[in-house]
Length: 377
Image (cartoon, helix red, strand yellow):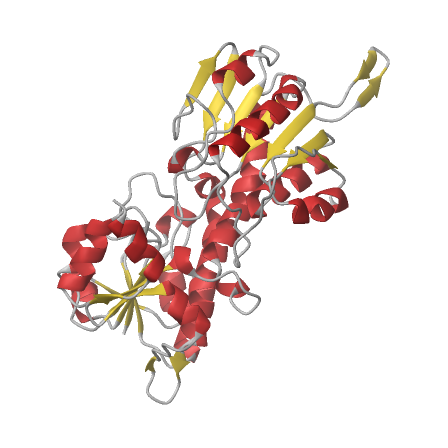
């Protein structure tokens, strides 16, 4: 039995599963159960789920009897002990920061897949929730900036004169950054972008933006496409190179993350001070430490007359589409490892995808990267 409980995180507007995915899982031969009003925050009624084959059951009954529990956020720690031994939990788990959750899974012999640990490979693309949600976060960041900036984005030629296009600077050209570039261009802004990985220059140019080149010395990326962490000397060179561009920008959006570590500080107070009053900075990394000095997750602060917006669950601002994408990621993951004969999840431990994301199995933490993170704490 697959059970999907209602999300309990107070600021979460997304849902883990939409009816289309339930229909897909039922066709595989799975028994799918949901908690009452699980899809309510995105406008999905219980009837829409039952029409495609789901059953509505009590939360505690679902947790106790499920073979697989699908969620979006990590579970309340007290609910893990309700799950049966040998069952499988799949959700975001903050694997490099929340070790107490891992200990509870291990203690109760509940297997756990962390959606953050899906490898960034071609085969795993359809399961990659980090990318699907980052894509939407990049879009939302530009829309939020446009809402707060006291200027229009595009050039406008009017009888009253010509309005110049605003200048926007995107720092970090991963999935979120590239979507931010594309969205800003669609709105008519003049876009510049920077990334420590020279290999993304072609992608930036293909979207119509200018790639800002800053020589920080040797850089690179991991096998999964994440930027490698810079040395302190490289970070300082990067800040110096960006300062002039930031001073000329009306909007700055920062998206830089280092996988498994705190986000690097890129925009300091002296850079903010050089910006025109009324300018806007959106820090998409605010929840993981922040790229911008003084930014706070979920808050808008004024620093030297510049509006600094700390992102918090930006995909949740477009919850319906974010839920559709996350639900598809979950459904694709379960389908990929589903055994139609036994109607159960197939633990193919030699599989590259499962080997990366199945962090706890049979009461043991099996991911080396997380083990290293724990030992360094």
